[in-house]
Length: 135
Image (cartoon, rainbow, N blue to C red; front, top):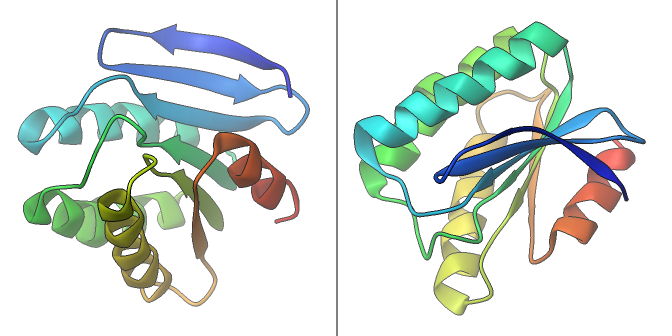
């Protein structure tokens, strides 16, 4: 699937999957704490400005999220996305058992937030995009 790069920094890349119009947010390095929140807010602004209902976030640069970051993402960031009309999200995790387990817990937590929102995690961006295309 072809993509267009919308923004690239050392810390993250924002692309658009051209055929789907879906943003792909990729961490290029591990972020935590306030810097993670700043980047996530930037991504939220993109979602709000474009009015998309679906997104993909690639966290292959992470082995696992800090507990405080997971809490903030679930209690603040995702509810904001849902308020902006987002109904589906897909996550891509690093190729490790730790990452898979971490993302599995995140998936369960995020799916419990709103019955009209669905989040799934995948071991590859191609699989995530395939699933998000069906949503």
